[in-house]
Amino acid sequence: MSSGRGQLILIEGLDRTGKSTQASILLDKFSKSKLLKFPDRSTKIGSIINEYLTNKSFTLPDQSAHLLFSANRWELNNEIIDLLNDGYFIVLDRYIYSGIAYSLAKFEYAKLNKEGNITSTVDKQIGDVNWLIGPDVGLPKPDLTLFLTIDLQELANRKGWGDERYELQEFQTIVKKSFLSIFELQKDDDTIEIVDVNNKDIPEVTELIWNLITKKGIHQLTNKPIEKVLN
Ligand code: NYM
Ligand code: MG
Image (cartoon, rainbow, N blue to C red; front, side):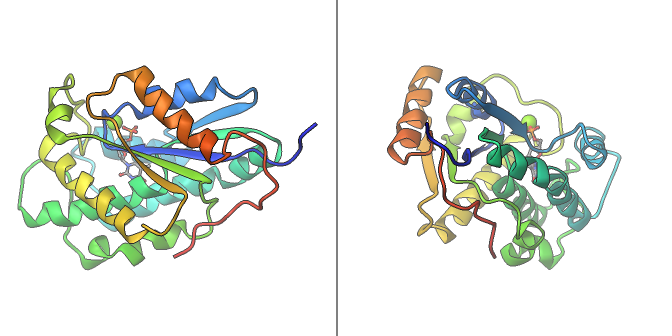
């Protein structure tokens, strides 16, 4: 019988790229698995985040909003560690890279002086990747991160955006650039994989993802220690 801990698999991407669909398909491939979605709106901090995302007249400094998303991850820190040690495979639907990418995108977006209640400030912290990663340092680091990427044209053809804060085509264009610039900075990190989902249906994307997972041995229990996010 094999022993060891389960692994932490993160699916990242823009809104409407199929993250949640793929995350739930992936869960069924493991006998012990758990889905965690960030932001987790069910916690105390999550309920403030939900208010921020859904109520455009509820404003917060961008620094505060950023720290709340990180604080929400810390609310689940012990649960993640315990589940992994208990042999669960955890699939994360968004996590630390969404945290950096969406905040960083606000900095660029604010420079365009657009309406739309996306952002409240253009303070330099929000454009500083080192500041942005700071509060997440020490959280469990995913064993594998899959970034689902898509052409913005194809994304625009998918059925409508919701009307939460951030769900604007023009903003998502900038978020995509932010994600790619963050992954460029991490290009020597072999736990990060960019998955091109253009012109692919759901089973094709699942196959791509599953091939990556098995090739890297992420589908098996492991004895490696749980890594931590570093800056
Ligand atoms: N989001 C998500 C952030 O801005 N920072 C974060 O740290 C995380 C985890 O929340 N537009 C944003 C991205 C999304 C929004 O997420 C709500 P979802 O997956 O649509 O519920
Ligand atoms: Mg959304």
